[in-house]
Amino acid sequence: MNLEVRPPLWDTFTNRLIIQGKLVCQTALRIGAGSDPLLPTASDLPILLLNGQPYIPGSSLRGVLRSHLERLVRTLEPSPGGGKGACNPVDKNEWCIKTEDMRELRQSKKDLAFRVWDKSCRICRLFGSPWLASRVRVSDLFCLDENVKPLIRDGVAIDREKEAVRNKFDFEVVPPGTRFRLELLAENLSPDELGLVWLGIRELQEGRIQVGGFKGRGLGFVRLEKVQVHMVDGTDREALKNYITRGEMRLVAPEELERWLESFWNSCGGGKGA
Ligand SMILES: [Zn+2]
Image 1 (cartoon, protein in one colour):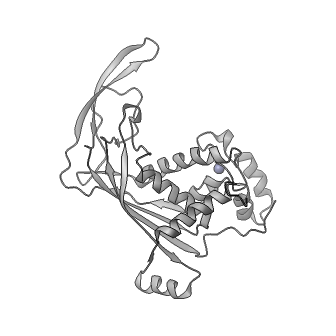
Image 2: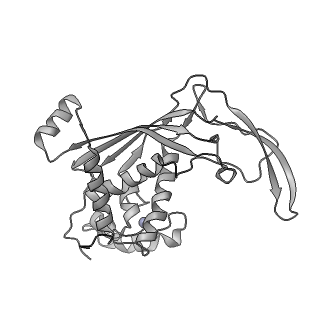
Image 3: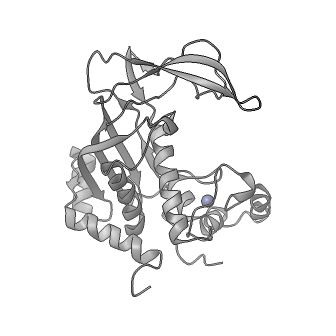
């Protein structure tokens, strides 16, 4: 086990990244009040509202960002663990640190945080796991438009055994063109992790990530626009002072974003020197 690499812990401050933008619905979007039921009753399925306006929970956007990056990382690094690859968070038997592994790790209390860090996959290190806090947060995305009127779509639930229509139901959607304010905050990321987060943001910019329910019906296509990336480096005393006293952060230039991507690519064996 390599414990010489000190992981970025949460009690120190290395850097803070804030990415802001406008998420624009390209198609109708379905963020339900409650999860989308497979077999809904005859009652309508309303959309999630806050003060009468639709919104997207930050956890829900973070979730789709995570699973999108999981698929990508798995392609590049097939075996998860030790800071590489992506385990399967929805199956307990496929976690990079299973419950029984954790019991074993806890036997020796010394350096537990480092041991957990050491064994965790690339995605769990960034987005968290049952044993590790996430270093990426997404605030709830509030609607930037006023008086958004939900559209009504109708759906059918199929009885899988009889292959017959079991139930017809109405559901609400947010109309195309609706805009939401996105803010992602991440702390203490290494250059390759900055690259991975930026890769996810790029996928949102390109409209490759679907959000919300009924994706199979072509709902939830979004595009991230007007993206701004700000950062503060905790190791730069002057920058840290300006941040703490005045909330100042520097705007990250496109060349630096490119270097982050390069750093991610090199860290997963893509670069010629790896
Ligand atoms: Zn994992």
